[in-house]
Image (cartoon, rainbow, N blue to C red; front, side):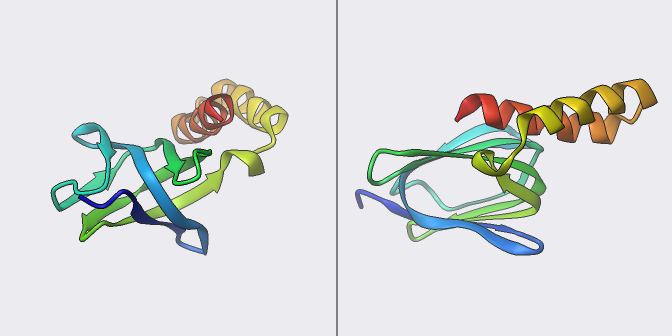
Length: 124
């Protein structure tokens, strides 16, 4: 079994993160899944939620992901997201304001997106 896997996290408009990792945890329609080197091939649908990547050098990268697909084969993991942003790129105060505004307006989609962004920030 290989000691690491190659990860590509791509949003519709850009490559968000690429590198070597020892573990990736993501939320799919079937529940949370952890992928390590040597995992069985898989193809799944991503749910909105934080994605956690443990890099080969021991760092943790967290991203807020909103929909998309996950694919793994031959120690290559692809996360193809509709929207994705690294937790380090998220302005927590702005996300909190967006959450409050979405709640006040009854906008469930915006509320979910802001909630995921805040969970990603708190997980980093």
